[in-house]
Figure 1 (cartoon, rainbow, N blue to C red):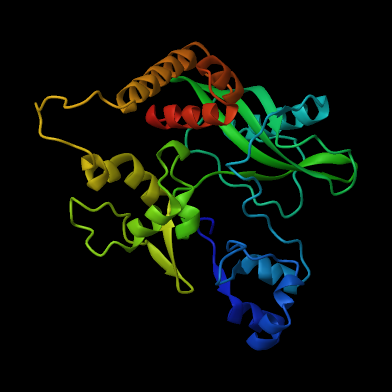
Figure 2 (figure 1 turned 30 degrees about the vertical axis):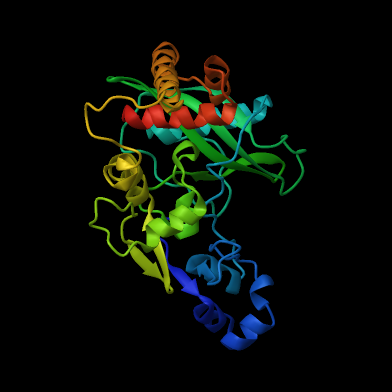
Length: 326
């Protein structure tokens, strides 16, 4: 993924900054030895870097963080360390209210701007980590997911924040805050995982969608044209893929697959498709009711109440909040 508003550098540019030839840079695998890591997929044929990180590596400065936390990571280990909880409360209160905070922040940390909405106060309900909180040792790092509710004159707003914490100078500090941006760019393989798992086609079908030569045909499902080409590789904005998935794809061939003329009688007992759809609708309705009672509902709680896994609960929560504009 290429985070929004970043400048990318290809292999030639990286080699130039290091003062060596492109061949030397590639053939001797010098790219594996520099402190700045590629931001392209590990399996990608074309590698590219964030230019600011490359410059920091060349000048031996602190390399700025870009995407500290994986939004698909499963956070299910409760954080109970009071010093960490206090740090998060202080930082997030100042972050979302604009009142400032005394929470320590790591040097060089790149903190994404908060939402435009102004809040009066913040209440943190739960903090979960993707792995056990490490020992308080220098340079220890942990990614956490915070469920909170922010309040203003319009009401209560459930929010979710992913942060990276770092132990430095004898204390935990905020190293970065990850926020999904609609302008983030994804190559074809990365964009595939933006589609929710329960609606995700096979990877071979996805590639067919991307190579469809007749995008205007109602009989052929296809994803939109790429938004841009980065160093010869097509990339799509997050907003492009999510809009297509939610509003366009089922108006194409997928909506017509298996269809029949309106009013025609059943020729055989219907398959389980309809009961499954009814079950999914019932789950979504129940989740909406649960969120009305508890805006800070966690993925684990949602999964337990709906009889699904915590991960599926997270997906349904995300979908419900997106549908309500939260």
